[in-house]
Amino acid sequence: MAGTDPGAPGAIARLEIDLDALASNHALLTARHGAPTAAVVKADGYGLGARQVAARLARAGCRHFFVASAAEAERVLTVAPEAMVAPLNGLAGDAAEDVAALGATPVLNSLSDIAAWAALARRTERKLPALLHVDTGMHRLGLPARELAALAEDPARLDGIDLRFVMTHLAAAEDPADPSVAEQLTRFAQARARLPPAPASIANSAGIFLPEAVSDLARPGAALYGLNPTPDRPNPMQPVLRLMARVLQVREIGPGARVGYNGTWTAARGSRIATIGVGYADGIPRALSNRATAFFDGAPIPLVGRVSMDLMTFDATDHPSLGPGSWLELIGPHVPADAVAAAAGTIGYEILTALGARYSRVYLEQDCPTRDRPGA
Ligand SMILES: *Cc1c(COP(=O)(O)O)cnc(C)c1O
Image 1 (tube, rainbow, N blue to C red):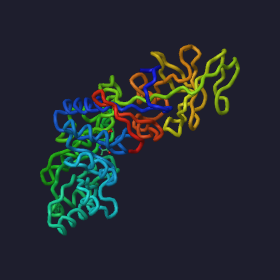
Image 2 (cartoon, protein in one colour):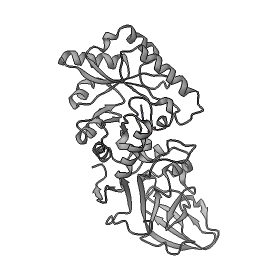
Image 3 (spheres, helix red, strand yellow):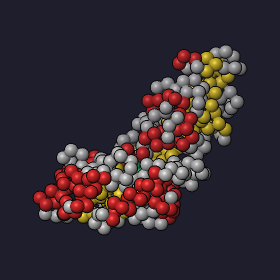
Image 4 (cartoon, rainbow, N blue to C red):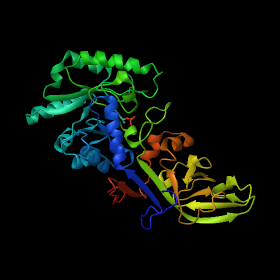
C-alpha cells in the first residue's frame, strides 16, 4: 500500500513482481488466442527476471519460451528443462554445437543457419529440433525471399532438422489500420505453401488481438508483463509490477526557490520538496524531468526538477502526511508503465527492460513473498 512500509529492510526502492498476475495474464492470452501460447522472456524477462518468470509460467503449464540468445536460453532451461526454449537470434557465429549442447531449440534465420544445424544433425546422427523464421516484410531477421526460394527448390537442405514451427513476426500488429499486417500474412501463407508442412507461429502480444493472426503458437512478451497490447483500447492485462521508492528527506522551500540541477523548476509558493533515492541510473528516463507523476495515498504527486543519477524530487506541498520514510509508487497500478513511457517519449518495453539492478526485488506468489538479490 502506498504510504506504508512495504517491508524491505534498509531498501530505498523496492520492485514487486506479482507472479500470480503474470500467470493470469498468460492464461488470458492463451484463452484469447485459443491455441498454445508461448512466453517471450528475452532481456531477462523484460527486466522482471527471466528465471522467476519462466519458473512460474512453466508451473502454470507454459511449454514454449523464446529468448534472444543462447546465454539467455541457458538460464531459462535451468528452471524449465522440459520446455522448448528458442533463441530468436539464431545460430550467431558458430554457436550450433553450444545451442545443441544446451538442449535449446534455435530459430533458424538464414540458409547458413539451416546449413549449420543440418550439418550438426548429420555429424551427430540425430534429428535436431528447430524453428524456421521467414521474413515477410520486417526486413530484420529471418529468411529473405531469395533464400526462401532456394529452400523451396531444395527442401533436402532441411534433412536432419525436426521442424517444430515456421514463424514470422509482424511489424505493426498493434495498429490494425496498418496495411502491412495483411501483406505479411499473405506472404506468410505463400511461404508456408512452399515449405514442408509444419505448425505456424505468428502473433506477438498485439497479434493475439487480431483474429487473422491466430496460429499454432503465439509469442507474447509485453502483455504478459502487463503492458497494453491494444494501445487504442483499455488495457485488458493485469498489472504485474510495482516500483516503490522511500522518501529520504522532505524540505520546506520559499517562493522563488529552484529545485535540482540547473534549477529547471521554481516554487511558485512556499513548497515541500520530497527527495527519493532513485534516478536515471536506475532506469528512470531523464526525459521525465518535470514530467512524471508518482502516487501517494491515493493522490498523484508531481515530479519537479531534473531527474538526477540517483535522486528525484517531488512536490509534496499538498500532502502534509507525506514525510521521510513514506513510500511513493513510481510504476504500478496507479502509474502504468505505458503512461510513464508516454511521458518520456518512449514505449513501455523500454521502461521495463531498463529497470535498475539496485532495486530490492520481491516476487509475490500466493501470499508468499520471496526476496531475491538483483540478477540472482
Ligand atoms: C520480442 C518478440 C516477440 C514478443 O513481442 P511482444 O510485442 O513483446 O509481445 C515475439 N516475436 C519476436 C520475433 C520477438 O522478437
